[in-house]
Length: 295
Image (cartoon, rainbow, N blue to C red; front, side, top):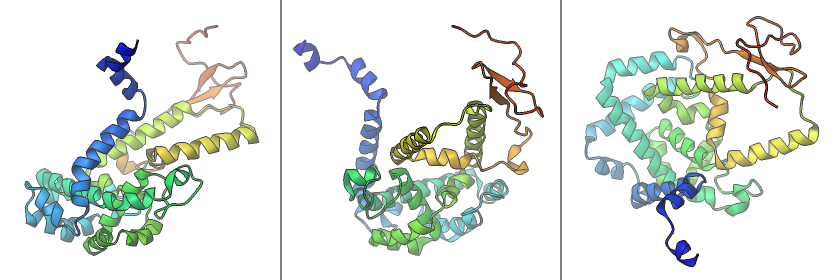
């Protein structure tokens, strides 16, 4: 037994890591150590222009003087993002936009390396919402969103935050979910719009009309669990936010959204509600073909 423990099967180790958060932490730490920490101690944009050898200095200048101002109309409102995304593609072309996207990612990683200590200085209590850190955001994912927000504020604000990360605290109060995601909404518009539609589909699938409302105690427990999970998985906030975005006609393409509705009968059977039909679970129709319930 001791021999087996001292020489574990690699497949067993992989299975353990892949089913928990250990692998996530391992990959995140390795990525942070190799890509962010070596350059995070420098100021300004110099490390970016030197590290990305495939990107010319002119790309860096155009990024700050052209792309960042061009993306400003969608910083706090995604209406019109599709049209603006198409204009950027027509003006710059695919290769130039790829270089801009690389710059967004690298600048964000460098600033995240500066901001993360301010998020972690509150210790475990702050991570569980029982204390406050200097940068009192909900999760490390929100710290990354803040880095993207600061980039959108322009070169002077970004360089000031790199020199003195505490200056980003003021920007945190002005950050919105849109300002943290607006580069992705424009440079990867279809991907983000697809995620928004997928979240609405999942919501329609999970919603059950006629489901009993939870009691006050159950609601409080669910809210506590939800708040705790969102501190570790900040992307849950993004999922909830995306359900409300990219739902106008310009984002539908050639297929409009028309998700099914489901209801829960008193006997526990889930049935589909006919389009335009009543929401009363007793009058909802069963799907065709009907799947027998198992006991």
